[in-house]
Image (cartoon, rainbow, N blue to C red):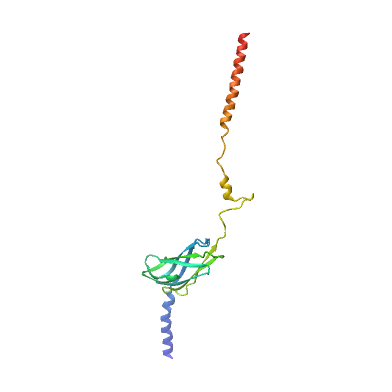
Length: 200
């Protein structure tokens, strides 16, 4: 009976430090832009937030929707390993803590895509952190165009093309000629009247 009791106590002592010093962490995925046209590239950054500890290993698999394709990947300074096809297996010689970046990768919206897509990162290793939730980023497929229709049936591009230089001030020379002519007539009339007065 005493052996069983001591075994339970010993087991509790061994388990307790693991729970007390458990490392909490999350993996984040940020992709930009989040709205693209078919054929456009999207750049994604993998980062982590680790508290109450540090990590030096990272492993994850990138899962893409059918209308997205993997292009390339690179690691952040300090991390080395493989990242082929969106499958990451990385290590760092300097343990990381708090908020830090791990790697970058690029995906592309396929040319024949007709719907929005999703990038999902499933983390299988983040140091001693357990149960890391998947990180997901939605990529919207834009269908808008650069030409906007107007109420008169023309498009904005055509309207802008038809805009000419403003004509404000173009009639000023004619106005000056008119004013000069009227002034000449007034001077002539005044002079004529003065001549008539002198004759009288």
